[in-house]
Length: 286
Ligand SMILES: Nc1ncnc2c1ncn2[C@@H]1O[C@H](COP(=O)(O)OP(=O)(O)O)[C@@H](O)[C@H]1O
Ligand SMILES: [Mg+2]
Image (cartoon, rainbow, N blue to C red; front, side):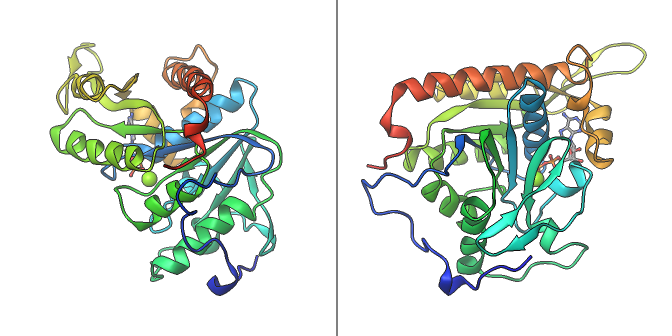
């Protein structure tokens, strides 16, 4: 596929204050999955959330906005090249999810050396020029932190809300708070906080080990007035599922590896409904 050079792309700037953000035709809800820190399981949550929503009968797309570290192709088990031209790109489909990722365009181990404006325009194309079709949910896997790409995306996309992923460690929680503040500054509703890698069940003894501490996600969410969306254990099958392109959420809903992600998807759907009732703050910036 071919991308247009950045000078043909718009909008280059976030919409003027007070203007509604342009919806994506056919897409009902945009959910951003963010974190302060990398390596906390953001892509793992985004991928398993997308599949769990699809397993619940929803039509789902997954946009990988982590342009410097796009892991969605590996975790979704595909490295196809999207077809089509700049304003009419056909997404790759894997496990029933429509996908777009920089990893499809820049495969292998070559690092990207693009600067901000180019990245911004590519993200806008991923959002607006991909034929997402009719979707109940478009999940967006954000890059870690509060950098340019994350900010330009959340300022221009009509997000229904953000899911913040953290581990229970203080370093992760510190950065998660910064991510929450970034979303709140640009009036994006926070759907809630997920504590990933909460604990490990020791094989054999069944003893629970709190590798990164315990309860920090819940207490931080409560202190910030946010919904707590649940704990996800450290589960070797989750890592294997990611590395082999067959995420655990493809398993039956009752399977103990898949069930926590199904519960998370259900909770996030509920939170989207609650936020939708709240009205226009979703699409209008002050
Ligand atoms: N709950 C979990 N249990 C086991 N491994 C996990 C879990 N969550 C994430 N991982 C693994 O940790 C690594 C980092 O996760 P990833 O989703 O890539 O993080 P991020 O997107 O925040 O950088 C991956 O190898 C992933 O498979
Ligand atoms: Mg990632």
